[in-house]
Image 1 (cartoon, rainbow, N blue to C red):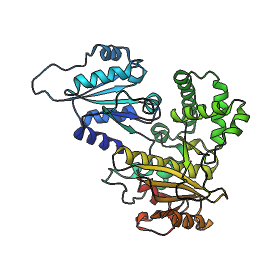
Image 2 (image 1 turned 45 degrees about the vertical axis):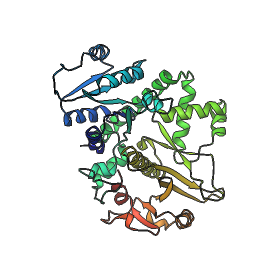
Image 3 (image 1 turned 90 degrees about the horizontal axis):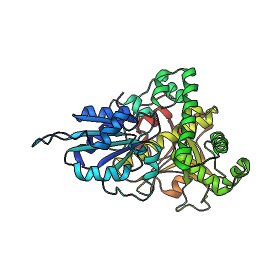
Image 4 (image 1 turned 90 degrees about the vertical axis):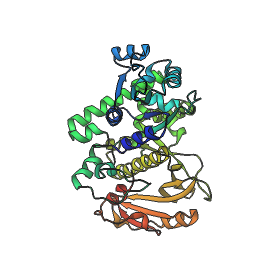
Length: 396
């Protein structure tokens, strides 16, 4: 299966000289994707910092090609290079001296994600690309058409059910084994806690594990830091720091409430969702998290591709009127999304009210029990109930 990110990265190297930083959760397919980019842009060299022979080549620059006049550029894939303590200065010097001879693709997980939020000594030398688990569109679309949205395309019941049940991480999705899935999830949890210890110096891992379990059970709900602090028995600021660390390590992600031009809106409390929706037992929570993950993937893909500035929020007022999601385009409301297991609950009146208040072009109520319909959801400008299979196939 070719990921949508393949054409995005190949196009990057055809148009731009900057390094490409590919960050995302562990086991999401970064290394496989990097090697596919290398195959598309031959010749290429793959070096992994975790391999001692590769590490020696990295430190001695043994990968440099012979100085041949008119020689072609080589694609250099650097995997896990962020584990090298001086990786930023190393990449800066390497790029400045060798950019005429190489295309640089750097892959990593948490540390690349944390690094981009801090003071950036590599400013102007790279573009960031954020890779996500598999989605409906990637399962059904052979290639991604230019622009934001795809034409709707049907996904088989078995493929949709597998994605919903096993999650979008490639290996569990392909194997579809309950035994493997449980072992894989346990290993991922252990790796997350190990990275947390290594990157943040947090020592109270047992309490962080309790916090992670609490957040797991609150997926799709408002996060109250004070209540979490009481349950875990640490300070509120400690809880805030730990939740940020768990987010940077791709355990969960947080959405802020949209407050601009909305009276009586919430201003602080975020909502929490999980990167791996397959761990959620409650079907309603899993449906909402499934859509949240698809929307986050789409907004980050569109932004990283240079198509605009896309962000994901939720809508909620102090009198508890709520719509699950709002997607903005260049800081303006674009479309609203409410998620339901069944279309029989009827159209939420909040969709129309919020759409009028925000002047958003589209408002969708996504239902999981409706069959696929081969019609463009975004042709509708009034609130409308749409099948999850149709709507999600039009995203990324």
